[in-house]
Length: 141
Image (spheres, helix red, strand yellow):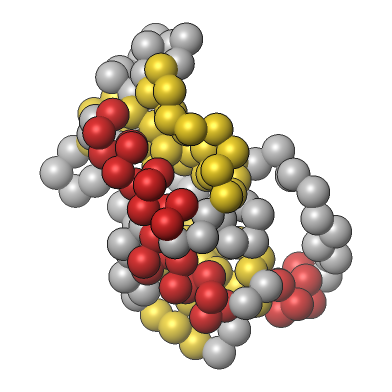
């Protein structure tokens, strides 16, 4: 079996507001926008923003809030890129959770929550390479 993740779907309360955050805060361009859902093509996988009530109905499970223990990470090529994207996200409405700082593993990372409370990490990991297509390649420890 292939080790692959195809799509990450985030439940959002207000789709136009969330799209505005991803497009202004992270600089992303949507691939497809339909009633109730928006898709972004990432490097090797996709991200969908799905209206909360529609995702609850589709998954047949209520969304009851709280931190789920899931974070989404976007690696950057440098500490300066981490700082720039973090500032851009905050200026677009994200909530600061932990400002970027050096990590015990030799990297640099910070956390924010997007407009719907999903937790994102921005990181620079000197043990990873981001290729020309934007894929993050991890080195074995």
